[in-house]
Image (cartoon, helix red, strand yellow):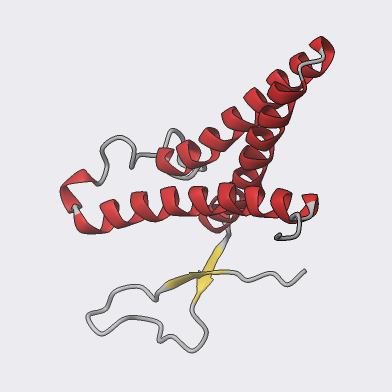
Length: 144
């Protein structure tokens, strides 16, 4: 008879599944953006403000948050009512959403930070490009 899988392993795999789902959503949006140039500058590939990332990134962040919140609310309600089966299922939904938030939250912060990073001239770049264009602009890299 097979051994019972430890609870921690199941929780990790559930969170990993949520993170993988968010990564897949991000990949699909990026693939579509790259393969369909006519979709650029149309919803969801627009920025609500110049300082914010594309709406597609906000969608990827919003989907697991809603799953996580739904799992938390149903879990608390089921626990208060004493319904252990619903509480167990909602705990898994909560963990799945939490995994998605753990992927998409830092991704959104990264995209926002890169978008708003101050630009400086590339090191070693000539004052003018080959056709007299200004030097290339690159983001400043800060080490923590």
